[in-house]
Image (cartoon, rainbow, N blue to C red):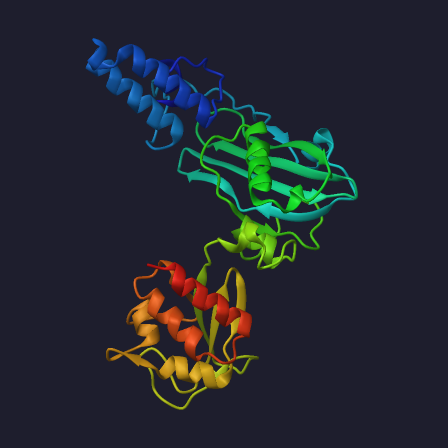
Length: 358
């Protein structure tokens, strides 16, 4: 089935470029009319499902080819639709003088590439404050490029929507208030789907096309970690902690990397410098030399800790979320009880994490 045929089956005109939501709605309507359980034609229902898969990129479309003897028509480059980040920013009226607090992790993050077309659809929300207002900016970047004869013009569009609230009290430190307005900002730019509550701290970031990078964390952890509220504030006390472990090694000496004179395991060599990072709620802490050696050499049931965490082989940059791992609770307890180089408040959080886990 070609793209044009798929559009026709779901009721779109030839020049349409339906969004994922449009495709879903059209499919539902056609399926409701033609489903065999409602007396419809099973063959027609199959055709409707195939059309949906083709438009969503789940099935490769066939090419629209004419007879081979037809002369090739001259190709005229199609002018695409393009809205730059700065154009969208200007049109939406993103204010200046805002201290940006966080940007959500990529929402939805639909990306698809094939021989026929490339497509991506990503959303973010930036949150910041001026002296008088809370500011939320919903952002969408939609890209679609078709690589075959008769394809639609390319699209590369940024879209934005801004809304703000006067600062009246401490509403900007309420997790539910922030969460609700982030969802509201996403909906205002057409987001459909489940919201990922992970955010990246935007301290020092200026509103630009490049999103801030860093470890993502929940809104509650961001509030506590950025100093917006106290670690003991009731609004964040019940948050679930996330503990990760990261193993690194290098052939050259680096800060927080140590050289240990023993062969362990088969993929590690005596010339390696090794480092262990404990990452608690997106903040990383290197183990000191004595703690790193103890961690690397400790045995549980005849296996080294890293073997238990990662399996038989691990490499520079291997990382694991302990709070989701089968052996995570035992490893976190070992860290809380034995790693003296970790700050006291971090060890306290580790113990609290052990208490949270089943």
